[in-house]
Image 1 (cartoon, rainbow, N blue to C red):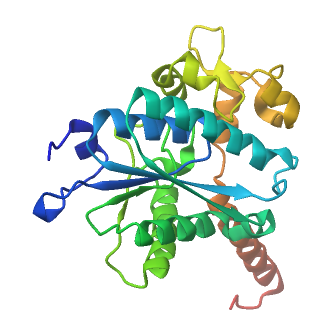
Image 2 (tube, rainbow, N blue to C red):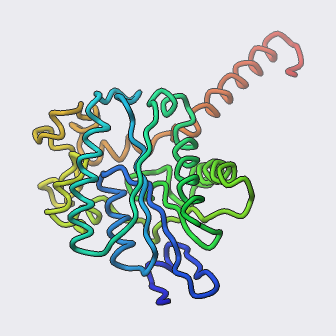
Length: 270
């Protein structure tokens, strides 16, 4: 087996007996996951698997019922184009009620479903699962932060639950973290326009991708409220308290209020 640089950077370890490493990408048909698929096919010798969790209706973030169909069409078109250009990979699909994804355990549920696919596909602790792309625009996947460590721990628990044991495939990340503009450029125009994302390189000096607001994909689903912000404003917004820590901030605020009230009343704070 040829051990490639990309495979080492992604944290892969060659399995014993000469078997090829297996990698699973949770594929939504968007820019990030399509970039990961293409990079694995081009830069590693891995046996590559993809899985799409399709929402039966619109999700809790306000997306209309067309979201699942939009992703499905993108994956079908991308799958044909990528297979023709690169090599064959194995793709599977499952369907889930979006109410479960929006109930606060969405990431863990997706990790569990991906792990079940990996298990029936013969994955071992020497293989890898990519549940998200740690791009530079996603603070929750910055490997140097506590938020990323907590997210990976939560997803690892879901994977162990799916396998029913502690020896499970690795959750892997790219090093260095890829920039969104790099992902778009890596896909190339012909593949990027097929994705289920309305992102496109902006005509500025940085080439930061933004929601165009005028393509068919934008017209089929609402454009995020941050789409009209400048790149600087969007990055500042993304750098605020990660969703993973919001409940901790709320608990800390309540504790401080309780301590202040106790101090004012002269009673000890229990």
